[in-house]
Image 1 (cartoon, one colour):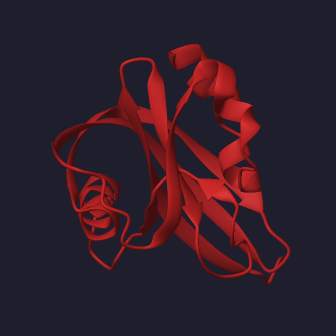
Image 2: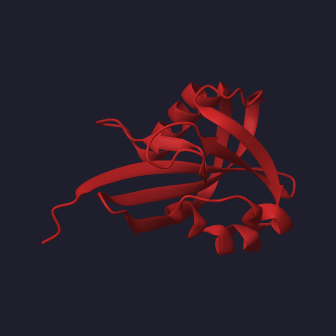
Image 3: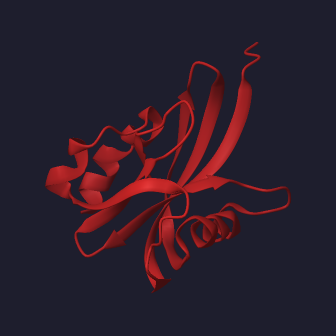
Length: 131
């Protein structure tokens, strides 16, 4: 049996037209890697509720969730990640970076030009199909 810590998170694939929003981590083991914004669910929270809260906290932005995209299961060296991904759009706010060091809007042709976290990289094919 795998004794690795298990972490369950939610991620927002925020779309505007034919581009998606990516953020660069400013801390931790994977500092400088790119990811879809989001975070951990709190006790008693559903995934969509957690995602809206995380985006509000991290980016001072209100989102609307269009639909569930997929769940990614990924084994990192020190933990197992379960990441629920949702296609979203902005309702209000300016995507203020409160926790990330940088952000970009990426078109389909530029998606692979940044260094994604391994779990996030796993959904790029799906996102390319969406764009």
